[in-house]
Image (cartoon, rainbow, N blue to C red; front, side, top):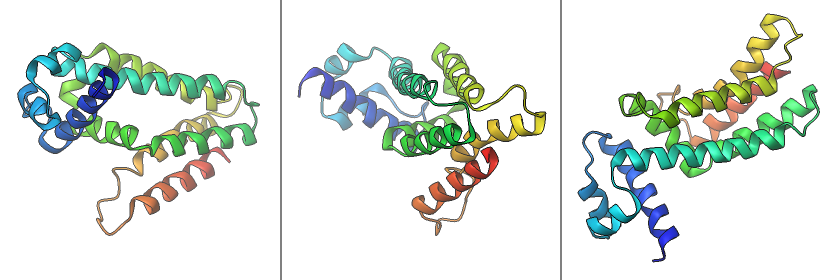
Length: 181
């Protein structure tokens, strides 16, 4: 494997293990074994679990920053907001982004002191600001802000295992579009 593939594989495996076993219960040795590399090879890319988490958050922030830059080119109209929310929802459902949400939901203590977590919060505030017309009534501003969270909530609100991932995603998008409408 070349370096970018190894690094990405380490991130994917670590993320899955952090979700399944918990951040605290997962060791670098276990991650290396699961990836099929030596601890030295893993250390070449990441010296600590926190470095892995930071890299995952930073990758997510970079993707959100790209989306935010694109969103700023859209007209600040209901149609522009709808276009943004649809793309946001679509990209959120990409496997690593979806898994990052699960990780963040299940491992909040691992994120508490991570500086990238604070940057992620700031990025999310920028996304909400993009959707919000400050001249609109407060209730309308709140609905626009809640639209993004509706997309996110669809991933963990439904406790019924018979609800498919596609149905969850569709419900979240439908609610988000109603909120910005």
